[in-house]
Length: 272
Ligand SMILES: C[S@@+](CC[C@H](N)C(=O)[O-])C[C@H]1O[C@@H](n2cnc3c(N)ncnc32)[C@H](O)[C@@H]1O
Image 1 (cartoon, rainbow, N blue to C red):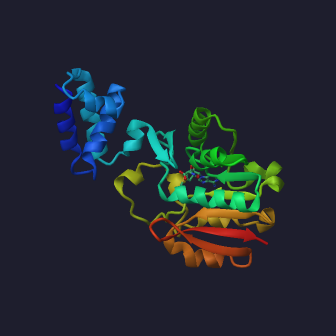
Image 2: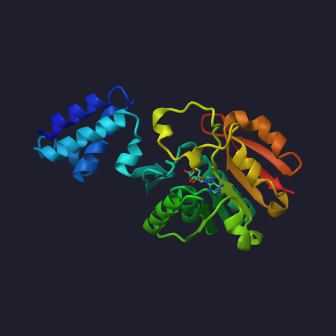
Image 3: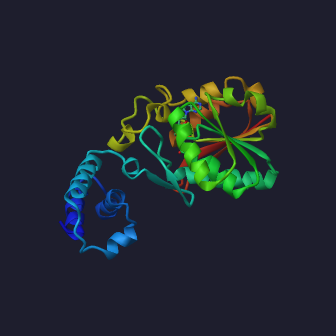
Protein backbone atom coordinates (compact mmCIF):
# COMPACT_ATOMS: atom_id res chain seq x y z
CA UNK A 1 0.00 0.00 0.00
CA UNK A 2 1.20 3.52 -0.74
CA UNK A 3 1.71 5.92 2.17
CA UNK A 4 -1.03 8.17 0.74
CA UNK A 5 -3.57 5.28 0.83
CA UNK A 6 -2.51 4.19 4.31
CA UNK A 7 -2.89 7.78 5.55
CA UNK A 8 -6.46 7.85 4.19
CA UNK A 9 -7.30 4.51 5.88
CA UNK A 10 -5.95 5.73 9.25
CA UNK A 11 -7.78 9.06 8.98
CA UNK A 12 -10.97 7.14 8.34
CA UNK A 13 -10.45 4.89 11.38
CA UNK A 14 -9.78 7.96 13.55
CA UNK A 15 -12.47 10.32 12.28
CA UNK A 16 -15.16 9.41 14.84
CA UNK A 17 -12.87 9.55 17.86
CA UNK A 18 -10.57 12.45 17.09
CA UNK A 19 -10.98 16.18 16.43
CA UNK A 20 -7.87 16.13 14.24
CA UNK A 21 -7.78 12.72 12.51
CA UNK A 22 -5.30 13.85 9.85
CA UNK A 23 -2.78 15.08 12.37
CA UNK A 24 -3.20 11.99 14.59
CA UNK A 25 -2.82 9.70 11.55
CA UNK A 26 0.47 11.44 10.74
CA UNK A 27 1.68 11.04 14.34
CA UNK A 28 0.93 7.30 14.24
CA UNK A 29 2.65 6.98 10.85
CA UNK A 30 5.65 8.83 12.19
CA UNK A 31 5.84 6.39 15.13
CA UNK A 32 5.59 3.19 13.04
CA UNK A 33 7.94 4.34 10.25
CA UNK A 34 10.39 6.22 12.53
CA UNK A 35 10.21 9.14 10.11
CA UNK A 36 9.40 12.75 10.90
CA UNK A 37 6.01 14.11 9.88
CA UNK A 38 7.72 16.49 7.46
CA UNK A 39 9.55 13.62 5.76
CA UNK A 40 6.37 11.59 5.52
CA UNK A 41 4.59 14.48 3.80
CA UNK A 42 7.34 14.63 1.19
CA UNK A 43 7.18 10.86 0.49
CA UNK A 44 3.45 10.24 0.12
CA UNK A 45 3.94 8.03 -2.96
CA UNK A 46 6.30 5.61 -1.15
CA UNK A 47 5.28 1.92 -0.81
CA UNK A 48 4.86 0.84 2.82
CA UNK A 49 5.69 -2.63 4.08
CA UNK A 50 2.57 -4.73 4.86
CA UNK A 51 3.59 -5.34 8.51
CA UNK A 52 4.04 -1.63 9.06
CA UNK A 53 0.59 -0.98 7.51
CA UNK A 54 -1.02 -3.51 9.85
CA UNK A 55 0.74 -2.03 12.87
CA UNK A 56 -0.42 1.48 11.94
CA UNK A 57 -4.03 0.33 11.43
CA UNK A 58 -4.04 -1.58 14.71
CA UNK A 59 -2.66 1.46 16.65
CA UNK A 60 -5.27 3.71 15.01
CA UNK A 61 -8.04 1.34 16.13
CA UNK A 62 -6.61 1.37 19.65
CA UNK A 63 -6.61 5.18 19.55
CA UNK A 64 -10.18 5.23 18.17
CA UNK A 65 -11.18 3.16 21.23
CA UNK A 66 -9.95 5.89 23.55
CA UNK A 67 -6.28 5.06 24.12
CA UNK A 68 -4.31 8.34 24.50
CA UNK A 69 -2.31 9.33 21.41
CA UNK A 70 0.60 10.37 23.65
CA UNK A 71 0.95 6.77 24.93
CA UNK A 72 1.12 5.53 21.33
CA UNK A 73 3.68 8.08 20.18
CA UNK A 74 5.44 8.13 23.60
CA UNK A 75 5.67 11.89 23.20
CA UNK A 76 4.01 14.92 24.73
CA UNK A 77 4.60 18.65 24.58
CA UNK A 78 4.80 21.07 27.48
CA UNK A 79 6.02 24.67 27.76
CA UNK A 80 7.99 24.38 24.52
CA UNK A 81 9.52 21.02 25.51
CA UNK A 82 9.08 17.65 23.87
CA UNK A 83 8.94 15.01 26.58
CA UNK A 84 8.88 11.23 26.75
CA UNK A 85 5.72 9.77 28.28
CA UNK A 86 4.37 6.22 28.55
CA UNK A 87 1.38 4.34 29.90
CA UNK A 88 1.25 4.63 33.69
CA UNK A 89 2.37 8.27 33.68
CA UNK A 90 0.12 11.35 33.59
CA UNK A 91 0.13 13.29 30.31
CA UNK A 92 0.90 17.00 30.98
CA UNK A 93 -1.94 19.42 30.22
CA UNK A 94 -1.80 22.87 28.66
CA UNK A 95 -3.34 24.56 31.77
CA UNK A 96 -0.34 23.47 33.83
CA UNK A 97 2.01 25.51 31.62
CA UNK A 98 0.66 28.58 33.42
CA UNK A 99 1.66 27.08 36.77
CA UNK A 100 5.25 27.18 35.49
CA UNK A 101 4.88 30.84 34.44
CA UNK A 102 3.42 31.75 37.84
CA UNK A 103 6.30 29.96 39.57
CA UNK A 104 8.92 31.67 37.36
CA UNK A 105 7.42 35.12 38.10
CA UNK A 106 7.59 34.47 41.84
CA UNK A 107 11.13 33.07 41.62
CA UNK A 108 12.20 36.29 39.87
CA UNK A 109 10.24 38.68 42.15
CA UNK A 110 11.22 37.06 45.43
CA UNK A 111 14.65 35.73 44.48
CA UNK A 112 13.75 32.18 45.49
CA UNK A 113 16.65 29.74 45.28
CA UNK A 114 15.13 26.33 46.11
CA UNK A 115 11.94 24.94 44.58
CA UNK A 116 10.20 21.59 45.04
CA UNK A 117 7.70 20.05 42.60
CA UNK A 118 5.42 17.53 44.32
CA UNK A 119 4.01 14.78 42.07
CA UNK A 120 6.31 15.47 39.14
CA UNK A 121 4.96 12.86 36.65
CA UNK A 122 6.99 13.30 33.44
CA UNK A 123 9.05 15.94 35.27
CA UNK A 124 7.47 18.62 33.07
CA UNK A 125 7.11 21.39 35.68
CA UNK A 126 10.46 20.73 37.34
CA UNK A 127 12.36 20.61 34.03
CA UNK A 128 10.72 23.79 32.71
CA UNK A 129 11.60 25.64 35.94
CA UNK A 130 15.16 24.27 35.97
CA UNK A 131 15.68 25.36 32.36
CA UNK A 132 14.32 28.86 32.89
CA UNK A 133 15.65 29.81 36.30
CA UNK A 134 18.79 29.41 38.38
CA UNK A 135 16.95 27.59 41.14
CA UNK A 136 17.91 24.32 42.71
CA UNK A 137 14.96 22.07 41.81
CA UNK A 138 13.76 19.01 43.69
CA UNK A 139 10.98 16.80 42.33
CA UNK A 140 9.04 14.01 44.04
CA UNK A 141 6.52 11.34 43.12
CA UNK A 142 4.96 8.26 44.69
CA UNK A 143 5.15 6.40 41.37
CA UNK A 144 8.35 4.60 40.36
CA UNK A 145 7.27 4.68 36.73
CA UNK A 146 6.77 8.46 36.90
CA UNK A 147 10.23 8.89 38.44
CA UNK A 148 11.84 6.73 35.72
CA UNK A 149 10.07 8.82 33.07
CA UNK A 150 11.12 12.09 34.72
CA UNK A 151 14.72 10.79 34.93
CA UNK A 152 14.71 10.12 31.20
CA UNK A 153 13.40 13.61 30.44
CA UNK A 154 15.86 15.25 32.84
CA UNK A 155 18.74 13.47 31.09
CA UNK A 156 17.45 14.54 27.72
CA UNK A 157 17.40 18.22 28.70
CA UNK A 158 20.64 17.93 30.72
CA UNK A 159 19.21 19.83 33.68
CA UNK A 160 19.91 19.29 37.34
CA UNK A 161 16.74 18.13 39.09
CA UNK A 162 16.97 15.95 42.18
CA UNK A 163 14.35 13.19 42.14
CA UNK A 164 12.95 11.80 45.38
CA UNK A 165 10.41 9.05 45.93
CA UNK A 166 7.59 9.34 48.43
CA UNK A 167 4.27 10.88 49.35
CA UNK A 168 3.48 14.49 50.25
CA UNK A 169 6.32 16.16 52.19
CA UNK A 170 7.94 12.94 53.43
CA UNK A 171 10.76 12.71 50.83
CA UNK A 172 11.70 16.37 51.49
CA UNK A 173 12.01 16.09 55.26
CA UNK A 174 15.81 16.51 55.44
CA UNK A 175 15.86 19.52 53.06
CA UNK A 176 12.49 21.11 53.79
CA UNK A 177 13.99 24.05 55.72
CA UNK A 178 15.75 25.19 52.53
CA UNK A 179 12.72 24.91 50.24
CA UNK A 180 11.15 28.34 49.64
CA UNK A 181 8.61 27.54 46.93
CA UNK A 182 6.51 24.40 46.48
CA UNK A 183 4.68 23.83 43.19
CA UNK A 184 2.33 20.99 42.44
CA UNK A 185 -0.28 19.76 40.03
CA UNK A 186 -1.67 17.11 42.38
CA UNK A 187 -4.47 14.60 41.90
CA UNK A 188 -7.72 16.57 42.42
CA UNK A 189 -10.51 14.67 40.65
CA UNK A 190 -13.44 13.27 42.61
CA UNK A 191 -13.79 9.47 42.45
CA UNK A 192 -17.45 10.15 41.53
CA UNK A 193 -16.50 12.09 38.37
CA UNK A 194 -17.29 10.67 34.93
CA UNK A 195 -14.15 11.00 32.82
CA UNK A 196 -13.61 10.78 29.04
CA UNK A 197 -12.30 7.40 27.77
CA UNK A 198 -8.72 8.58 27.16
CA UNK A 199 -8.40 10.21 30.61
CA UNK A 200 -9.60 6.94 32.19
CA UNK A 201 -6.49 5.24 30.77
CA UNK A 202 -4.24 7.48 32.86
CA UNK A 203 -3.01 6.29 36.28
CA UNK A 204 -5.60 6.33 39.05
CA UNK A 205 -3.18 7.78 41.63
CA UNK A 206 -2.40 10.72 39.32
CA UNK A 207 -6.05 11.71 38.94
CA UNK A 208 -8.21 10.85 41.91
CA UNK A 209 -8.25 12.36 45.38
CA UNK A 210 -11.14 10.78 47.25
CA UNK A 211 -14.88 11.38 46.91
CA UNK A 212 -14.61 15.16 47.07
CA UNK A 213 -11.30 15.46 45.15
CA UNK A 214 -9.68 17.20 48.15
CA UNK A 215 -7.84 14.30 49.78
CA UNK A 216 -4.39 15.31 48.51
CA UNK A 217 -4.80 18.89 49.79
CA UNK A 218 -6.14 17.70 53.18
CA UNK A 219 -3.14 15.42 53.71
CA UNK A 220 -0.60 17.86 52.32
CA UNK A 221 -1.71 20.69 54.64
CA UNK A 222 -2.34 18.45 57.67
CA UNK A 223 0.73 19.78 59.52
CA UNK A 224 1.04 23.46 58.54
CA UNK A 225 4.01 23.98 60.90
CA UNK A 226 6.14 22.13 58.29
CA UNK A 227 5.23 24.79 55.75
CA UNK A 228 5.90 27.93 57.80
CA UNK A 229 7.01 30.92 55.67
CA UNK A 230 6.91 28.91 52.45
CA UNK A 231 4.97 29.79 49.31
CA UNK A 232 2.88 27.08 47.72
CA UNK A 233 1.28 27.19 44.27
CA UNK A 234 -1.01 24.34 43.33
CA UNK A 235 -3.34 23.46 40.53
CA UNK A 236 -6.99 22.80 41.39
CA UNK A 237 -10.39 22.32 39.81
CA UNK A 238 -12.48 25.52 39.37
CA UNK A 239 -15.31 24.28 41.61
CA UNK A 240 -12.91 23.62 44.49
CA UNK A 241 -12.44 27.33 45.31
CA UNK A 242 -15.00 27.35 48.14
CA UNK A 243 -13.89 24.10 49.82
CA UNK A 244 -10.22 25.09 49.50
CA UNK A 245 -10.94 28.51 51.05
CA UNK A 246 -12.37 26.64 54.06
CA UNK A 247 -9.60 24.04 54.17
CA UNK A 248 -6.75 26.58 54.01
CA UNK A 249 -8.38 29.20 56.30
CA UNK A 250 -5.96 30.71 58.81
CA UNK A 251 -2.84 29.20 57.24
CA UNK A 252 -1.67 32.39 55.53
CA UNK A 253 -2.50 34.63 52.59
CA UNK A 254 -4.52 32.81 49.98
CA UNK A 255 -4.92 33.97 46.36
CA UNK A 256 -6.83 32.21 43.57
CA UNK A 257 -5.58 32.55 40.01
CA UNK A 258 -7.20 31.89 36.66
CA UNK A 259 -5.98 29.77 33.75
CA UNK A 260 -5.81 30.80 30.05
CA UNK A 261 -9.51 29.85 29.75
CA UNK A 262 -10.47 32.30 32.56
CA UNK A 263 -11.29 29.51 35.00
CA UNK A 264 -10.00 29.52 38.58
CA UNK A 265 -7.28 26.90 38.24
CA UNK A 266 -4.54 27.63 40.80
CA UNK A 267 -4.11 28.89 44.33
CA UNK A 268 -1.12 30.53 45.91
CA UNK A 269 -0.71 30.24 49.65
CA UNK A 270 1.90 32.33 51.42
CA UNK A 271 2.08 30.49 54.71
CA UNK A 272 2.38 32.70 57.80
C1 LIG B 1 -1.94 15.14 37.99
S1 LIG B 1 -0.40 14.27 37.97
C2 LIG B 1 0.70 15.62 37.59
C3 LIG B 1 1.99 15.20 36.97
C4 LIG B 1 2.85 16.39 36.48
N1 LIG B 1 3.24 17.25 37.56
C5 LIG B 1 2.06 17.17 35.45
O1 LIG B 1 1.59 18.29 35.75
O2 LIG B 1 1.90 16.66 34.32
C6 LIG B 1 -0.14 13.99 39.71
C7 LIG B 1 1.17 13.26 40.05
O3 LIG B 1 1.26 13.17 41.47
C8 LIG B 1 1.69 11.88 41.86
N2 LIG B 1 1.15 11.69 43.21
C9 LIG B 1 -0.08 11.24 43.58
N3 LIG B 1 -0.21 11.26 44.91
C10 LIG B 1 0.96 11.75 45.41
C11 LIG B 1 1.45 12.03 46.72
N4 LIG B 1 0.69 11.81 47.78
N5 LIG B 1 2.71 12.52 46.87
C12 LIG B 1 3.48 12.75 45.77
N6 LIG B 1 3.09 12.52 44.51
C13 LIG B 1 1.83 12.02 44.33
C14 LIG B 1 1.14 10.95 40.78
O4 LIG B 1 1.89 9.76 40.71
C15 LIG B 1 1.26 11.83 39.53
O5 LIG B 1 2.49 11.63 38.88
